[in-house]
Length: 584
Figure (tube, rainbow, N blue to C red):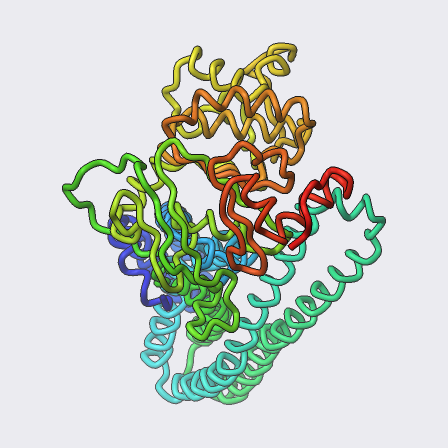
């Protein structure tokens, strides 16, 4: 989207877009009348010493000024309504677009950059619409009108003014040409500043815990310094604009006075006409200065518009399948067939996170996934709801490749407790019922009891109406995990995924949770990612992962006998004396 790409957003507000400039044209017309009226007062009132002419013409000038004020206010009102609505629509479209992005798309843009585009860049475009309906209508019209009036009063003097305008326009084009790339760089540097701020605020507790405030401050100062230097460099061209324009305008004024002085002495040019001509000259040159300032806004907004268009024109890497009239997704069976995955979609396998993953699971089975950090456990389960798409191979549910299942249908049947237990600002009830806003009170309490969080909530002064701080800051890690589990259980998914979601629970609470879940998940396919063998010891199938591949599959006892990686994990958690088998 360049600035010219705003047509689609302007169309719904065409009345405001037409009425704003129309009122501005009236204001320009009244402003062009004032010098002529001033000339009439000087020539026929002051020179002739006729007070009646001064009085009546002065009243007329006051009336014209008042009408100009009304027209200007009307233009501001309509221009403001148009710009605010257009900005709001662009921001809403950006937000909707980001909601369609996969994790891979968000990783590509970075969250800090997306925030900048939805705030600062939209404001730049919004400001441009405002000044375009005001300044970019007023300035050219006043410029053209002043030049025409000057030429009609005195052709030679008008040509001097016209020549000056040509020089000013040339200077303006040069400044515009050099400023555009600089504004683009400024926005990129601002992205880096916002990303650094967001990262620091998100991890402020870690920063303080490790006494890294000075280090983080230095990192911020570096990107802030880069942004400041880029802004200063871009501002130099803006700073040059007004002084150069003013200098040329003053030279033009001196030239006109030198040429018109002898004409006035010979009565070839009246004093009042000279006053009017100087006023028109000032209006014309001031209008050009205004145009130059507005064009700088255009240059800046054009960069922002392109950055906005980059987001709006990005096709999500995960394409939603068309709705098909097939049997409902029941989650009877799921299989991974030769699945490979790379974050950069590399087909060579060099950067693969997952390699040749093959396994099956059926309703009623619990599949536990265990392995060292970085083995690819979380990545594997994120492929099931298509948070990422496989690079090659396929994930099949009930005989249907998940890429052929509409995302809404697929994700509606999958409940996922993420590794990071994210809670939204609001009440505990709001967070539990996030996936089912019309849930009954008894259903909310039931899943809270299963998640072993009901007793804790009941002891709070406001119970389920207790407000949760940003990201659940007023709750412990274990409390947030249990609320997240309750939130997922409430939607009664066919496929339940628990991504290391009990890591913050003590052993006793985890045992109670497992016992409570047994009756609930017997009709589900359940995936449990765990670090502790005790969390997955009862699973019908345990997948052992190492460096992106499945190195072992079976029950706890089978793996103890056959899988060296599983044996090592078991030994590290239970000690050498607990191991009653020989390492193979």
